[in-house]
Length: 169
Image (cartoon, rainbow, N blue to C red):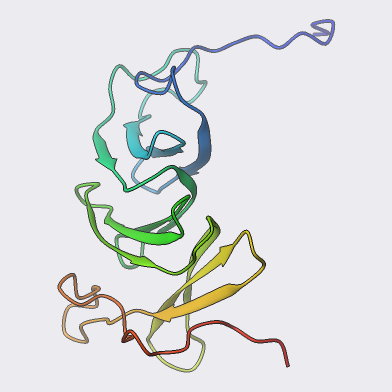
């Protein structure tokens, strides 16, 4: 049916009416994850809302970060999410409870994009984070070989002197 080019609003998600949603991701547990400019990540249970005719009442999880969240990636294999923040960091959160647990400062400018990649040659993972200055950092994650989960006490396989910037060949 032709609607004359007009968009029909389906409603809004509670908690995001006063901010800018910067990233949306779905996971396999029927959660819609929203990253927002107000520095929060919220997860909404969308079970039963397949047509998005009305929105869930409240978020299942909400976590606050150090600054505006500009991008987000979910890695369900690790139950781990990562956010790029306006203060130049990459921040990890647990997908089981939605809670932020550690961040790493990578830039003196905003971090703009982020993802978690699985290494081809081993069972390892890394965070890739790009800044508004064009630099991309690769930060290996410490994965517990027994549990297959990230070590929340020491998640990043780097020290303060480790060079993490990716340089073109």
